[in-house]
Length: 109
Image (cartoon, rainbow, N blue to C red; front, side, top):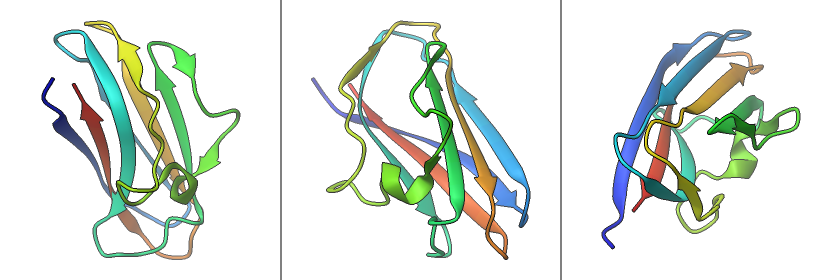
């Protein structure tokens, strides 16, 4: 099957702020990978990520966004089936001293 990219952008997240993004697939999908990309190349070490897929939390309580991954070689690769209509939710909390703008990128089939 063909791998497709889906990107959700948080917009600017001020220091101490947070952003939430979600996606509801219009067909059954299998999530192959999740990558976080900061648009200005800033570190995501002090940005906490919360990920829930089909109402199942995959972060307890959170994970540093950098740990999920910032490149395709070293990222979370769940190979997770998600049924049509299930909500995919990501919340990012910026605990760094400057704003960040994060792309949340899913690779799916």
